Image 1 (cartoon, rainbow, N blue to C red):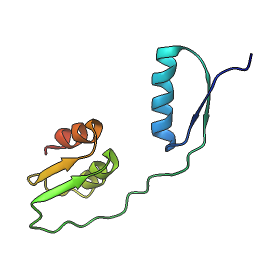
Image 2: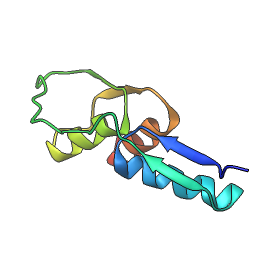
Image 3: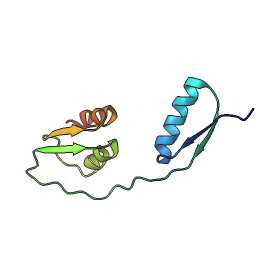
Image 4: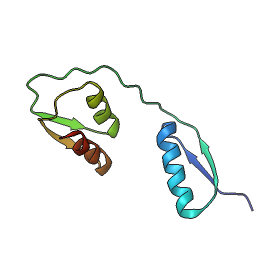
Length: 91
């Protein structure tokens, strides 16, 4: 019987976290990480009067934090992990 292989294509750090969660749940298995994308944070600028921010990932929240932009605006988030990251930042 062939060993089970988990193929992960997300960025390495996220793939490693997920692989650990799976292994903690189901036990040892072979993991192959073949990242199809990598996250590159670019310098961002926000309109000073922005009233609403939309984050589509935790990486967007991280970019906002690194840019040291204000967190007083209302924000909408795609997914619970993104919302948790925005709340932790002060949104």
